[in-house]
Amino acid sequence: MSSSLDPALIRRIVAAALEEDGARRDVTTQALVPADQQGSGSVVAKKEGVVCGLPIAAATFATLDTEVRLEPLVPEGAAVAPGDVISRVEGPLAPILSGERVALNFLQRLSGIATATRRLVDATAGLDVRILDTRKTTPGMRALERYAVRVGGGHNHRFNLSDAVLIKDNHLAAARARGLTIAQVLEQARAAAPEGMQIEIEVTTVDEAREAFAAGADAILLDNMPLDAMRQAVALAKGRALIEASGGVTLENVRAIAETGVDRISVGGITHSAPALDISLELETR
Image 1 (cartoon, one colour):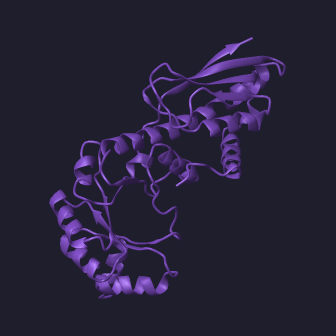
Image 2 (cartoon, rainbow, N blue to C red):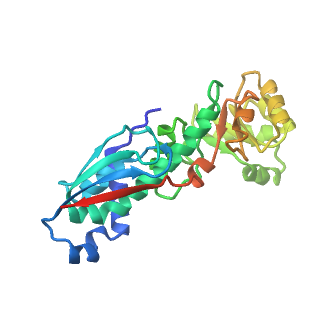
């Protein structure tokens, strides 16, 4: 999957963030910084990590003033160490100051996600498995956060509820309250879904996985299952369905999960709990 982003999408998200921050109504900068004062600065990594969000940061400054230029000094997805200069910014000082926080917020958040993803990808190196994100994203930021997952070497799960059928535990609970079996739930989902759409179902036991395989599910999500149970489910699948592990995945256990033979490991934490990468703008005025 391409890691590129739609420029129109970037413009919309950046405009909303700048409006939220009142960047065009920055009373402090308007009171203290003359319109003709110029400035420059370095965007510096304070922690080790993976850089992501440079095009969004550049768009942030350019939205406020097209004369502000952000020049990347490392490529998107580069690994950086504390003290590394990520980019240079220069131009009229006022829009640099007014856009600084929004630009850094994008860089820090997206770099944090890319960093968390890269660590999981590296931890499973050499194994035939994909690290996937989930829908546990910041409202309004899903496209950017999933872009950061791709920059970090991960892959995207369904983007939203219309992309694929994923029968979760609460769907099953509602169906079982009406007396339906897993096989009947899958049959009903298949009949209602658009032709060719993937049908995935979440299971918590090997017996549920066996029933789902027999009913012809395209993919099985193993939710918080022990490693031995995962290995049994993989053996049952015999390549007939994709096997996805989810729940309780950490950097410490992700390789052991991958070694069970699952095809995919989905990790909500890479978007909902990734710590922001510490990045700052060190300004030089003139």
